[in-house]
Image (tube, rainbow, N blue to C red; front, side, top):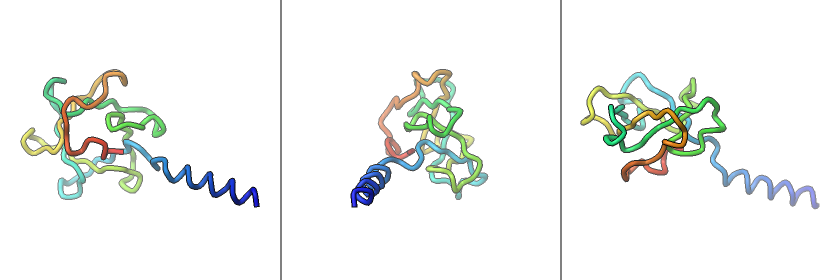
Length: 113
């Protein structure tokens, strides 16, 4: 009986945690994407400063992106557009994890993981 109770508690807590976070897949066509993204030249132009992490377990924030190989592994599929006006989200890629984060309020805030 105790083993069943412990198992139920473990399942309850593990289901409350995100399955993956910040897992990003780049699609080939805009119509396949959840989100269109444009990479700006300067941090001050960005909605979100993004840092690419090396391991999936590090992508626990909107601004920490792990690029997956398959769309089925992704939390969000994105398409990089050619013009700023076409984008849902403007990003700037930073060199350090500590620089990553939201610069402005955006409808996608909190939804990328």
